[in-house]
Amino acid sequence: MNSQAGRLTAVENPKTFTACFSVVASSDANTLSRILEPFTKRGLTPSHVYAMRTGPELDMMHVDLQLPDADGETLRRLANDLRGLLLVQTVLTSEKAQAENI
Image (cartoon, rainbow, N blue to C red; front, side, top):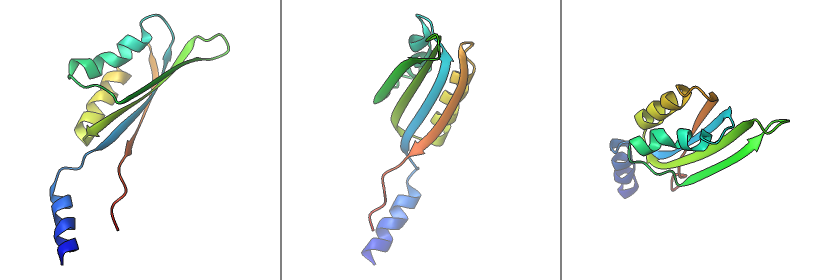
């Protein structure tokens, strides 16, 4: 009975998760700051940022970011802002959630 009440409470709460972004962009001196700008404008700080120059001439940058306690609307808006940047070629998103207690 008690476990049922816990499950109902979890369903009623808004779903939050860690939003994950994988961005491929042209590499230049401003690439990383431009990719972080949509987060900064919203007062959000990613918990994880990993950037690596790639490509045969190191002319591309691959940036992975994680934003904890996000919701679907935040994920969608940030992804759209990132896709709107001129230097960005690809933005992939995913959601990472904690496993439910069994």
